[in-house]
Image 1 (cartoon, one colour):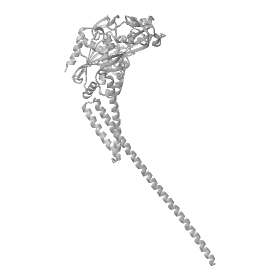
Image 2 (cartoon, one colour; image 1 turned 180 degrees about the vertical axis):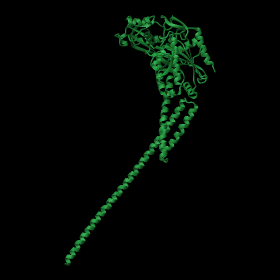
Image 3 (cartoon, rainbow, N blue to C red; image 1 turned 120 degrees about the horizontal axis):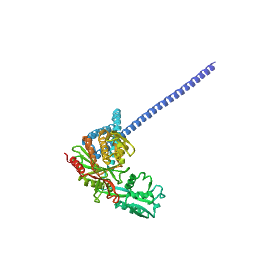
Image 4 (cartoon, rainbow, N blue to C red; image 1 turned 120 degrees about the vertical axis):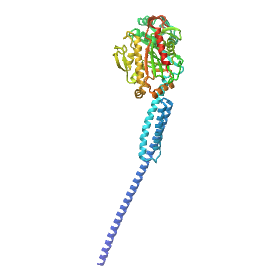
Amino acid sequence: MRNKGKRSTSKNKNVISKGTTNSGNIKAKLKSNFNSINKTKKSTKKSSKHKTVNSQHNYYIAAKILAIFCVVSVVIFEIMLIKLNILPAKYMLIALLVFTPLGVLTFLGLFFNKIKKKPKITAAVVSVILIIVSFTGTLYITGTMNFLGKISSVGETFSYEEFYVIAKADSKAEQIEDLDDTEIGILSIANENYSKARNELKDVIECEYKSVDTLDKLGSELLEGTKESIFLSETNYSVLDEGTEGYKEDTKIIYTIKIKTVQEDSARRVNVTEEPFNIYVSGIDTYGKIGNVSRSDVNMIVTVNPKTNQILLTSIPRDCVVTLPSFGEKDKLTHAGVYGTNESIGAIENLLDIKINYYLKVNFSSVENLVDAINGIEVDSDYTFTGEVGGYRFVKGMNSLTGKQALSFSRERHSFTSGDFQRVKNQQKVIEAIITKITSSSTLLLNYNSILNSVKDSMDTNFSPAEIKSLVKMQVDDMPSWAFDKHSIDQGSDASLTGHSYPYQELYMLIPDNDAVVEAADKINAVMSEE
């Protein structure tokens, strides 16, 4: 019995010992799991803390980059603004006093880590606004400087005259080599560029020139088949097209030669914000780029007196007889443009006995593009008529015009009994409407880039960039209201005469009335002399 009791006790001890062991294992496992959980928590906290530190570090770096970018943008903008020198001093000072402190404060708010979150966010918002404004302003300034450099021809400049080898549209000749060893008809005139072009053509092909006295006869001989080809200037080709309906459609250009012409700077410079000056406005009858010489269909003297805020527009008919200063011979004024702007200036100075300070040369593209860029103009028509160019209808009274309509309105003459006299009046109306609209502050600001882009390739002037900027600065500073007056030489006698350009062909010309010429000169001198 004792042995049984001992065995029973021993068995119980074994059970207890085994239970104790199991309990220890459980506790060990629980402790291990608990330690593992603690380690995971600690690792998660460390990872989260590390991510927070990294995120904060990236935030500070981004803020510093934004701060630097903002300061650089503002500095570049201010340098460009000072370099442009187009704003009056008071506006320049305001701009610098606004942009400089804001740039400095936003830089301090973004660059240094100790700045609190809310001020940093405010600085970031302000910096983005400053960057956008500075970037936009820099683009505007760069565009302005490029524009002024492109349209301003100071010093010696160059122009080009084009000459064409022309054949009938159905001619088998397709390229210049097809006319090798043939006769080519030319106009019998003495012209330096024409002579250079003929010599250059002979370097390309072997040919014989056959002279014809008049342009009309030369053009007719091509259409009739008497001449296989002819060689003419672009201007003469346009004259043939005007005189013979469909001439350009019935013919084709086989070859083109460009002759480069040097123009000396003819500017008589003055202080344009203090002294009166005359501008010769030449409107040539071409589209596209302004570099080619051509007939000057618009011939206007714009007399500006910045002291009295007066502008006088004096128009001279294109067919008016003048003396070409380089040749000492008579011709119509429109032909002077073929020999360069300086020839036209000299001819008008001789006619009116005045001094012309500057010129502004535009073409058909200039008018169309500029009027469209300022969203149209309003002109008061003296008559109801339909323009030959484009077939646009104009009513007596006010008309809202697009670019193409403004050009048609300016070019029409056959609808009027007074012909070219009424045309120059309409040209004055268009120019006055353009100047009036551009000088209104809202139009200039809202359409600034459009205005510059519209005329950058189709306008040329010998105003220096500094002189143009001075005029703009004066306009922005004082916002003067300009008083316009218009005058034209509208009296004279019709005549059929030969001239320097066409010595063997009589053309319509207007011999201006001497009293009308004197009156025009007196009006110009009156505006120039007023204080």
